[in-house]
Image (cartoon, rainbow, N blue to C red; front, side):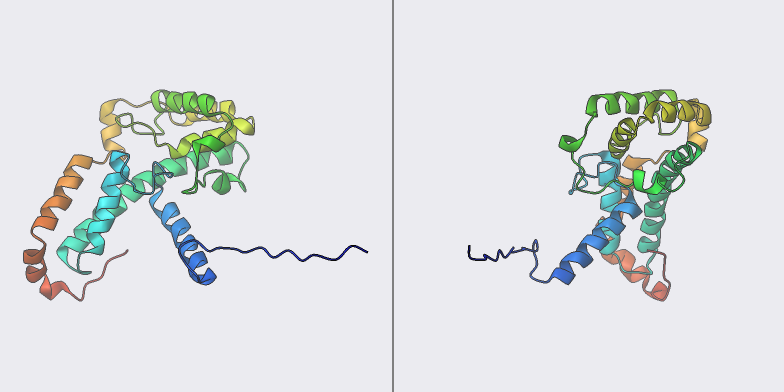
Length: 223
C-alpha cells in the first residue's frame, strides 16, 4: 500500500501577516476604484494621464487639509465634479447596455479592477479601434481629451460577447456628436490646468488659510 502524503499549501498575504487586514484593504481598494473610476485603472500611481493625476492630487491635498476648512470644502467640490463627470460617462455606457438587454449584467460588464492588464485582452487592436470610433463619432466622451483606457477593457469584453458592433450602433443613435459649444454646456469638461493650479496655490498658503478658517471647524463636508 502506498503511503498517504499530505500536501500543505502556504498562503502568503501580500504586505501583511493578517488575512483580515489584507481583505479589508482589498475591499477598500475596490471601493475607491468604483468611486473614482480611474481612467487608467492599471496605473497605481495615477500619474500617467492628466485627469487621473489631477483627481489624485486633489484627493491627496484634501487628506492634508483640515476637515471643515474653506480649503477642504473647495477641494471636495472639485473632487465631486470630477467624479460626477466620470459617473456621467459610465451611466451612458450602462444605458446602452441595458437597452441591449443586459440589465442584470451591465454593472459587472462595466467593472474594471486595478489589476486590469492589456496582456489578458483577447481583441486589443479591435477594441482600440472601436474606442477611437466611439470617441470621434459619438458624444459619450469629451472630444477634447483622449478616451479613458478603462473602456478599452470593457470593449474587449463586448467583442468577446459579439455585441460590440450593436453597442456602437446604439451609441451613435443615442449620443450623436455635438459641436464644441454644446459640449461646453454638457458638464463633461473639467479645466485640469486650472484645478491643478488651484491645488498648488492652496498648498502654498495652507497655514494662513488654516488660521483664517479656525472658526469654521465645526462644519463638515461629504467625503
